[in-house]
Image (cartoon, rainbow, N blue to C red; front, side, top):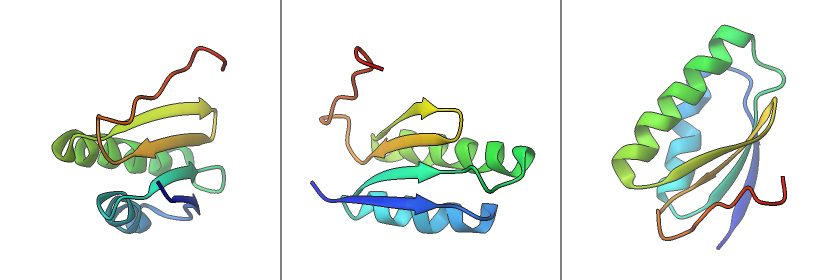
Length: 80
């Protein structure tokens, strides 16, 4: 599976991120450079989109998330 590191700068980029996930990419999402309320909107949008396509999202740290396209890819946080 291919991976992309995506540094979001605004909410408007959330659609681009979801498009990449729908194309089969795992996305490591960096929201560090986004205002807090806008970052929450990005995460909320992605959670909804991922739910619809059967994907998953997992927070890695305060500003980093892993998004995967299908539920068949299990995210484990045992070593985090």
